Image (cartoon, rainbow, N blue to C red; front, side, top):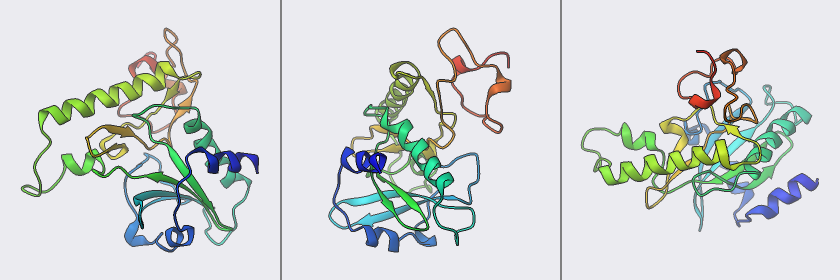
Length: 216
């Protein structure tokens, strides 16, 4: 109980819990926070909260949705919360609250107004003004600063493992926020002590921090 009490007090916002739960529908499913792993027990939704704006709700449940939340579900949810609770940086997403129900636990995040970098890089031709070079520079610099903090600014280094445009969200100034920590691991390697590729989680190829890789 203490864990959830600390979570609720961390960054309190006021919203109608049931309204959020009622809008966890197939129409509101989103591909942001995308992981290389496909989870039947974890889904992500974009939900509008009156007076607040759009929120992200990540739903943790059993693979069989008919079953209630058990210790396995709680531990997976707590693992993500414990990871993010120890990271304080402007370019790293923060959990603002949680919702508990018998069948699921939802972690709630604010959704930056400019959405994901993916939506800007792959928008239909003529749909909107493309990203200017100054905005691209802001995004690249912010992502680099966020990753640097994960690798060197935390008590235990964190390797994200899944940096992609879907996991980079943009606020009203196009400041980026790194999200999607499903594949992240803590304390994997330190400077000068790269992790052998055989110790990486299976399927995690693509972008990975060069300092965490051994003989590839």
